[in-house]
Amino acid sequence: MIKKLKITVVADNTASGKLLAEHGLAYYIECDGKRMFFDSGQGRVIEHNCERLNIDPLRANAFVISHGHYDHTGGIKYLSEHFSDNVKVYLHPAALEKKYAKDEHKYRYIGISKESRKWIKSKDKQRLFFTENPTKVFKDVWITGEIPRVHRIEKVERRFCLNKDINQHDDLPDDQSMYFYTCKGIVVLLGCCHSGIGNTLDYISNITGKNRIYAVIGGMHLKNVSRKRLDFTSGILEKYKVKKFAPCHCTGQKSAAYLFCKGPGIFSECLAGGIFSYDF
Image 1 (cartoon, rainbow, N blue to C red):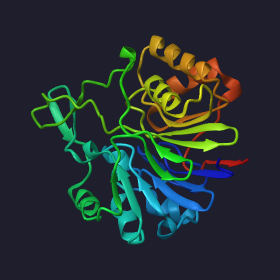
Image 2 (image 1 turned 90 degrees about the vertical axis):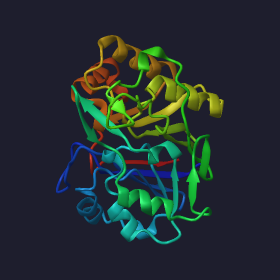
Image 3 (image 1 turned 45 degrees about the horizontal axis):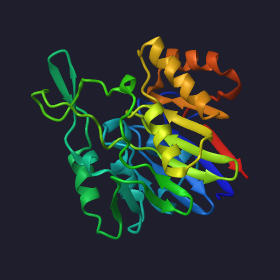
């Protein structure tokens, strides 16, 4: 079991102190002597925020990508220039596909940049790991890999596509989360959670054999969803008796406020500069 876990939010839609905010998400994780980044934000604030937070990417042992959208991969350029040559990279292969979003009948590219894709593919087989299935990063540190979609209420938005003609839907099979075995229970770290919090936590429960989850932190892609969906989400948190809950990024302020009202005792603020430190 993990004895010490520290999660620092490096990039988010909101920020504290002298940090900068952007529509993006990145974490720096320190876990029993190991260090890793989970996502890299949009790329506009990561250098500034790392400097302010005294985070040196050169010390990172691993880099995990939650999925292939620009607001989680835009900072790869900065990180790749500062990582050691030995850093290990973890992502689902579908994260490397070209990705688009449509607004009415227009499209815009939202995937990994050509330059970042080239850097990822340049890694040798000892340092590049594709995560279709649950994958161990370090002792008691895991990535879910592709998450089965069971709950129909958690469908991926139809505006995500795989081509410029915006007629090939992207169901985002690359969406994945991280989970940590700690003495107090499972800690779950989310990117955007396009798979849905119900599908994600159910899958982690199936993998680990645990029916309780200690903490859930991260983006939940709940902006503008129905009250029925929010009630379902609240029910999932209750199902797993979550003790600590910290939504951010794509959760949406109104949705986060609604979930706060449902469970104020477990709610924590989550923004760039925020630190979740667990010393078990």
